Image (tube, rainbow, N blue to C red; front, side, top):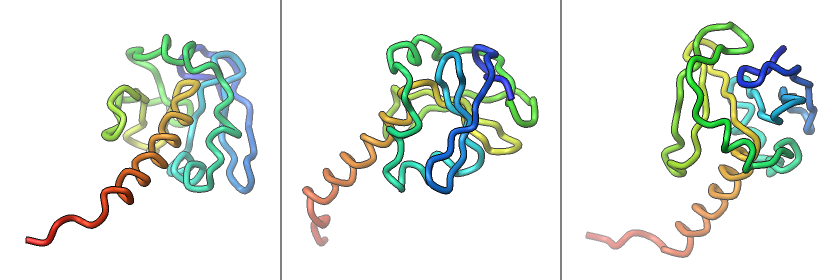
Length: 126
């Protein structure tokens, strides 16, 4: 498989029972359906997202990149909780490509978001 952004070779990286594809060039990561969610839930984002976030941010956004699995055009997406995180998603196989550093940002924000909700307590009763 080749990277949809820099066209370098992607390598399989195993983290526990989850296998993802990481670019040997830009260190971006391809996730098949729900693999990124499973990694974040397992607290393993830092184990696979080892690239330089500043370099990853420079690659965003790019237009007209193809899905490395089914070769259809990826669509640009923005995370609702982190609007500064842009990623690409396939509308057919539901895979996602995150630039280096983006998975770590999403994982860190998820834990901070949960802490904020817990600190706020239950909503007031009407």
